[in-house]
Length: 321
Image 1 (cartoon, rainbow, N blue to C red):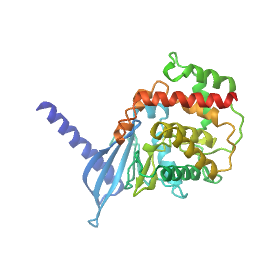
Image 2: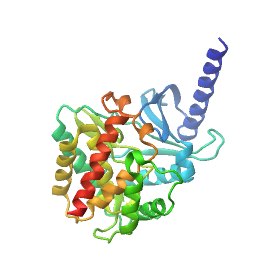
Image 3: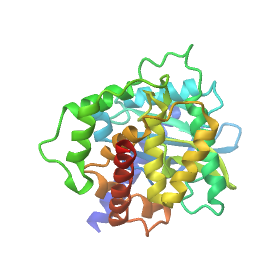
Image 4: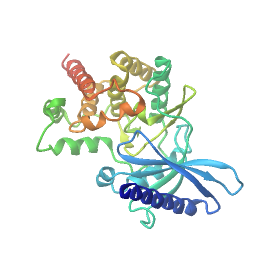
């Protein structure tokens, strides 16, 4: 009974915090209920159902970044909010940001109040080719955003992120994903020659960050890893996740779709594939817990390791031809 009371007290306290946040944005509204949204490991997302002053109900989302994300970038929440504001002037399907709070008076960490979009990630699409085509079109559209008159100085340079990662080797390397081999190869070739103009990058364009409604791509969410850099770095990240989710053929189809929609130089794709393959080092077990949340119990740590092994091998084989 004591445990149950503690849980009830905590839920009551959290409800009050969400209500305070809502009142700062829209004082005449009333919070009806809240519920957690599944899928993320870098941030906690909570849906709010709200009664507006005119009696109409609507929904919003509160996004609270986790300790790891805030440690890596203390300004991640503010940057996320600013980027979502900027994206409203583009054709990118992204959520509208409503409010940003970093006062510390409500929550101990910064949080965002953003648009709730009907839809959910689809990891079992009925028409995989159309799914992949829509994904490729949206990623190509992100990379084609004209950033000339946009102040994106708060976003990191993707090349610098990888330069730092390669420069700072961890004391213990994850040999289950060939981390030493990948690092040895990339350190010997880094930095890569610049073949493409820097573009806006999502940074984590994978099936869990894409919302679908009636088989149509409704929104791309979770922009906390956005950066500026070679669009191939973004493509490589997507390729690996599509391989994990849908297999080798799907990865190749997705790549062909993307390639047909762009005019960039693909010569360095194998190198960016290796960069993407470096990201899961020491995190693969944690990443493997996400896909079952979307109904894909068949995607396990073992299947992801097998896919990762193929992904690294094909990159090295292409480079060595």
